Image (cartoon, rainbow, N blue to C red; front, side, top):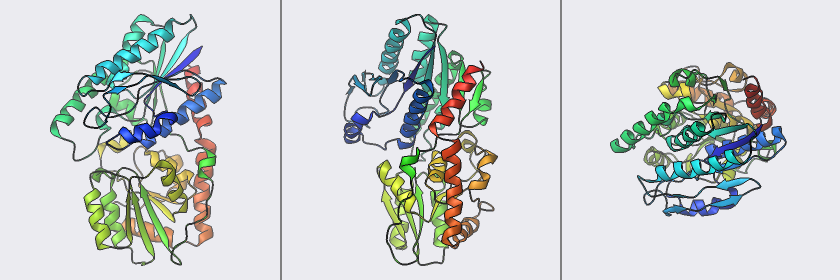
Length: 401
């Protein structure tokens, strides 16, 4: 059996160029998950597998400064595929370049092949479906981290873009018959997509151990408590709920640090002007975010369980937060399995006061108790949710088919 993977990640050798050309946010969480998936698969299989990649850039000229994406090799088996990135026509060229690369791979020898496909976006699935018609014995496993119609939850998304996204999502769902098996982040995804194919659930992958080793706390005023949120700042993700809860924290030594970009930036900036304890830092590089997480007193994910999309997502920051070794406050979302209950601090209800109480409760713990709580969560995800363990689950699942 030969294995390959279709990805939408950022090659490390190209990251600086990508940052210089991008006019919008980088999807650091999706990028990290794909690299962890690829690394875990290669380690479990004992070989580097080919990686067929299209850059996850926005369209030219609105979101990216280059109209053409070059073809180049990266790593030992990575192939970044060239395509025309001009708005409205780029998906056609993406499909064509992926199809061409996969046809060549499938024709290379007669061995049976399994192809992992990250995301079920229309350009990728269109290419896979065409190749599958020509090579029906190709086994396709789709890894679904986000549902196509729920990948952009900004309240500032225009009507035309919403209509375009809805149309592309519908096309994606119509191509699901070309997939033989699925890896889903939550079990509810299977119901929403109405799939009949086999699937397994894998919430995500914890960052590898070297990136989450304990670091000394940054120096600040004596007894300072750092409450940290890192991630997308959309209203639907509860960041304004967190701001309101923090305003009710009476401890003057508490400081709320917020990192990211999204549709609620204006409100966050205004809150930071009104309360000097609020520190808004905008979007930071991933390595800076991970360093801040390890220096915090408590990490908060204020996403409430009051939106339909919470059934179909396992927030990547939950895994990332736990891996930091710092206590985590989060709401019990429908997409979070019960096995995480022992390692997360849940507010007792959805009120602002309940979140305030949870923050004050963790901040008032003695240092050892807080450290023990954070360490237990860290040990759990690093042991059971690391790249090797999670991708072994995927391969074991495929082995039963």
